[in-house]
Image 1: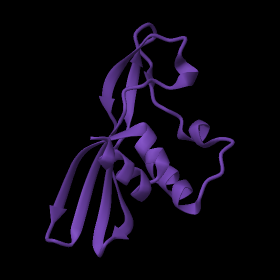
Image 2 (image 1 turned 180 degrees about the vertical axis):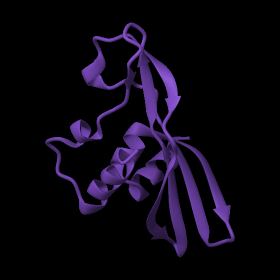
Image 3 (image 1 turned 30 degrees about the vertical axis):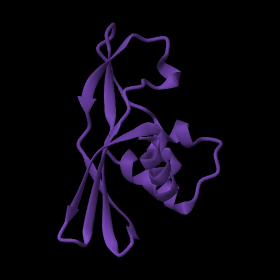
Image 4 (image 1 turned 60 degrees about the horizontal axis):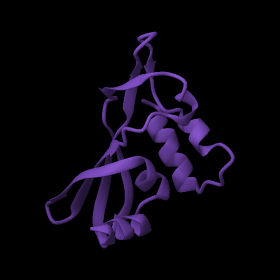
Length: 118
């Protein structure tokens, strides 16, 4: 249902909604909300000349986000990687290129910094 996606877009960074799928949510102890995201299986635009196949995910990164209605929120983010069928090189999206030339909030910049560490 698109209504849920519209609501998520208001609460979470647009970047997260555009490049990741919400795969699971879990409420814990009535005070903690866990949101699990996986990067969509769309290879990076700068790699269109290569033949890439999905090759799993990097280790999950957990980021504490702003509280929502009195709940602590944790974002569990799994970044995707691809394998070049010809060279067998592992490819991942360069988040610095994604953000290049855009105006970022401090929150968005911190989020990119956190997921780029892995």
